[in-house]
Length: 260
Image (cartoon, rainbow, N blue to C red; front, side):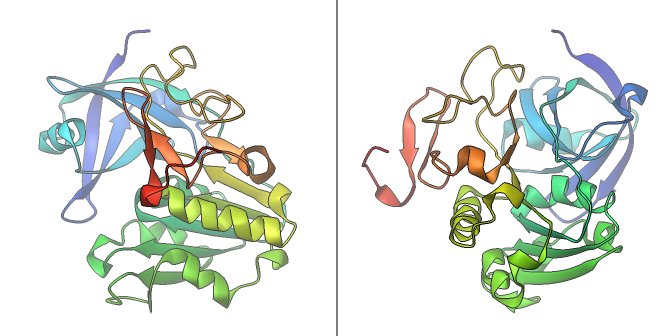
């Protein structure tokens, strides 16, 4: 499927390295938090990017595609495919939101759909905290690894300040290590079925054909059956243990070389 060319209507500078790109794409109306677009940037390539609202993406400058995207101006064109994937399921009752790093993009989109929530938001430094304005409808607790804002530490340290059992739903998006800690705690508390987490993996096609984003050992495709999964669907998976690079080779976290 070829990308559709769309105009960048507005660019919001969230921080030194993060920009939000508002797109002129009416067919995105009704997109769900947790879904993603395949974004093609001329002379750079195509990458999956999570929606941060029905018609925007919030992107950190980290590689070739994102860096080229950051060079564009309002009125210029990019190509998009989607929205794709399974989004978050919104349920009744109070929710707990957990985001680490740029996991804040889909989680902040979700926050705008909820009326009653507590959000745990973490970043490396205070300067890297973005999109906090979108959590105004609930309570927010903040952590930074350098202690420049909020509690010093990683975002999962904030779980000591709440009881996850008090919430009807738990939503999480962030680095693999964060997701594994949330999964393990949910298992310990016997609330895996309440947990929904958005998983990031290397994508090529974005439509479930190439198999590059398959999770071991179940074989579910992050781009098709995910990127949002229930905790009990992926507790036994590779999350937090290893990931795969573009060639399919396993990259183990922490130097672990044992199989699952």
